Length: 545
Ligand code: G6Q
Image 1 (cartoon, rainbow, N blue to C red):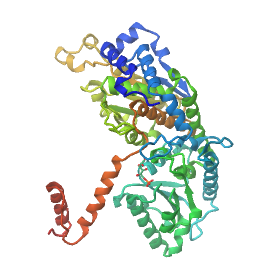
Image 2 (image 1 turned 60 degrees about the vertical axis):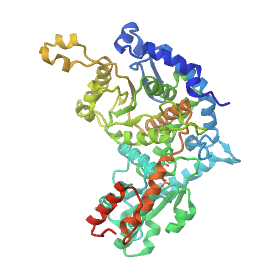
Image 3 (image 1 turned 180 degrees about the horizontal axis):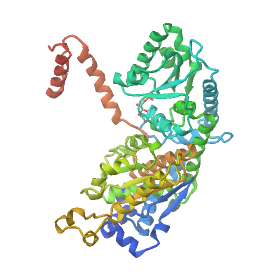
Image 4 (image 1 turned 180 degrees about the vertical axis):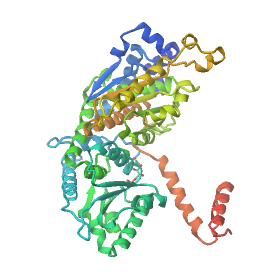
């Protein structure tokens, strides 16, 4: 049964009235009225503690938001996703990334096929290959052991692998070098291989479609570089493997499909880091730790599937994100990991959240009359504090922030970790409570500076706290965001699994490429685009017609 349009749902209407009533009240007031609030508005699952008490919400807000989730059919939509229903409506396919982490021995039959058995057969192939490379049994064309791995991919075939490698570098094989090439800008490839010995280098060409121009351009340059270095076309066989769903194109490129690791059309690019797209991750941390990563994902999947909405971390985070976006009017969200190894997490989450929920029509193709996905961005703490946090504290926009902290460091070093963690708690505290005029005066501040030093506070934050960064924890953290994104997309009634907006730019670029290189092309664009192409050609000495 399709729920009524979002703004006609009773809970939505009630939330609008509720926002008028409490939306401007201050977090100081909420905490004064309920001194125990910080111990109540929290939840915990799969090793992650979520403090959501510093949001501009009351118990009634949560009650209405969970009612909205019910009226939006969240439980059924979630179950449909978990059972392989075609929740990606515009591409008419399943979004079954949860099957990628179902334990061995369980089963999920979709269209007569046990997808879990297929997943584990690819995981076994990956484990076998990774073990052979890591042990030195798999050698390069000249018999040398592989020491360098270069993943070539873009978007979902890059951001997950890079983020996971950086996040789990502590657990990685340190004698090996890992590089990631994504940009079609040749600088990226050249810098990635400039100090590598081709005889010891393995390229993983990661592309679901094996038709992405950036990836194929980089892959061809990699092949040319390897053959030039090793002087033999046959070297490709021992130095190139592919991760893809497209056998034909992999074969056409010249990679033996025996060295291809498959996945399925029901794995979306931005939901693929735990599929064969994670081959570089497995090579770095080994099959056992990769299994721990999958177990972490699965633990959060189970929590999302089974926990009551009121205790469900992804549901709570998703609903609060909807509250902030639609009822408090916040158009961006900051994600600040206080863990240097998570430095690429904001970039990863940017794709996950914005490609998923940056949509303008509902599932049935009707223009939405409410806001959908906000802009996500972020930097690791404490660096951001000495840069853009000024605007978070005293700017004119309210920007909700997710802080991510850990109780223990992977490198206990003097006081470093306590200093780092104190900043997580202090920033969330300062954003919530600010500093009033009288507090500023009490500090003895000169009168003409008082206004400048006042901090309004009342900035919403979530704090996620875990013990220590492990492969398991990383899996749970990513699954938490995946399902929070799904929760938001379900409330908004949009397709969180397609990405048509990415296609237009690709198509237009294909038209322009020959106009940059051909002799005297006829330019049929607008005057700005035509002038830019002419200027480019002039600077390149190619002349204009
Ligand atoms: C992700 C998107 C997109 C995709 C890239 C790479 O959800 O679909 O980022 O991952 O365009 O695509 P290929 O893996 O097919 O090269």
